[in-house]
Length: 199
Image 1 (cartoon, rainbow, N blue to C red):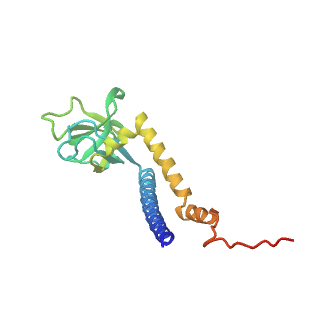
Image 2: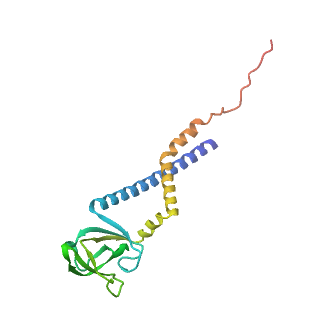
Image 3: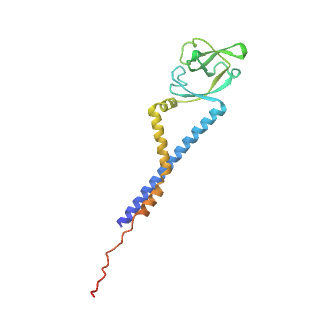
């Protein structure tokens, strides 16, 4: 009876491990598929992700969001659009709302921008021939993306990859079969004594 109960508990524990492993691998596969899909969409549609570092577009676009902007020609930009352009003197990118558009030479335009949370326009207009048109944003994802670029974030990501790889390779059912098959069987009952006859 004791052996039977131990075997049943072992089978239950094995079933729980198999179910948990399957669920974790399914989640990992789904996340991987989403990341690949987002990467391909950004590559094909010429969409650029950008982490929002200031609160100039709050409350609509909070700090720590990831903004996805599609590169378009200036003919597709209108007053009221949210666009991403490069700041002069290589000061990085900025995402603000268009408040005025003026034509320039060679098909370029001069964009006057202002953040929704700002009381005044940006100090100077931006002369561009193309800009990133806002498509969507994901709140708080910028914090995760920024953390993954740090040393601790990279180490945690590498550890997660190794853990999921080990989870994929180590199947609890095969391990259980090895343990069950490698254990020597014990004789049941008492030993039978064989009488020895003297010669």
